[in-house]
Length: 113
Length: 113
Image 1 (cartoon, each protein chain N blue to C red):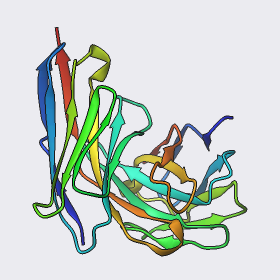
Image 2: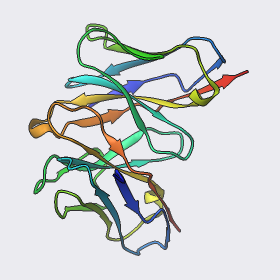
Image 3: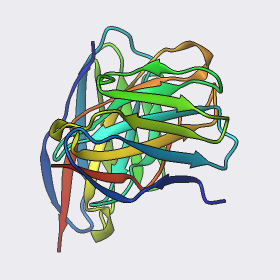
């Protein structure tokens, strides 16, 4: 089975940098994804790491260390609109392209003035 | 492109009633998924369809059935609803092998009394 751990809440100030950590224990691992979800909304894809290292997409970066079963999402130049829940998700390797995701319970980020 | 659409948006059922949640995508994606999300929780996979003509169980399949009607449509059926199935249900789709992004619909909010 899979289990993922993330902090339940993080609070930061507008303009600051925040890091949301994710540790996982899995029976099979193919990659780590991050999704953002605003209250009442649908999750939206942010990033994916299959290999160790840092992936950067604008203000957001994601890091993976496979040997430590650990990853994080880094948000820079925080804006009020970044207030949302952030989920890490582990991909199982499934044949035929239909990869399954197991999601963490999410980190609620509150950005304050 | 409408992306992923779900109907209905809201539904109230009595215990024992049945209903079908509809999902359609117009992006020509191969893979489709059904998740449920309970308050303060991450998404849990109910069923998925890696490609047209195939369906497989996810993490929490009990009490549900699915049909991949064609490449566009993937429905979720509750044969005899129970209060424990009160949740928000999200459908998602993914292009296929080599693509990591899952695209989510707006969700169906279901209350079982």
